[in-house]
Length: 129
Image (cartoon, rainbow, N blue to C red; front, side, top):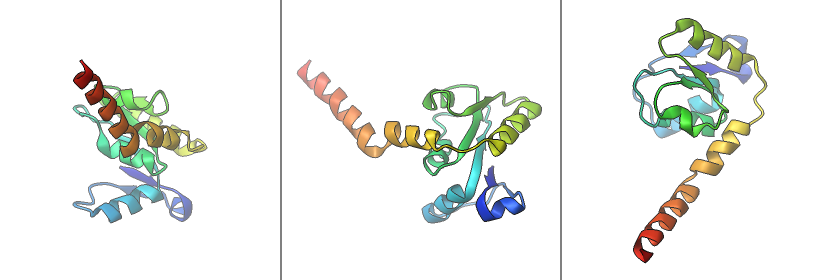
């Protein structure tokens, strides 16, 4: 779910299940959203939330499993079994000022350049033995 900001914030828009989107369309939705929520019960990395954060969205994410490990305390963690907690998390992020700190964190730690550098270093270490 994504919640609108900017011009679209005049009428709070909740976008659910838009179906298949091109990369360009998806990026456009992320750029217009203020909050991206992924309160999933079973999630691996949560790539959609990382993508949304890299486009400037505040993130509300499950407190279960691996996704929470990527945000260094900058995302709002919620209990995916609690509608009240999810709703409070979304409202909290809608009303907070977006400083861009989460976006900067994600871009610095998970950019293709940074990740490939880490991979190259790990492979080099293995080769050196």
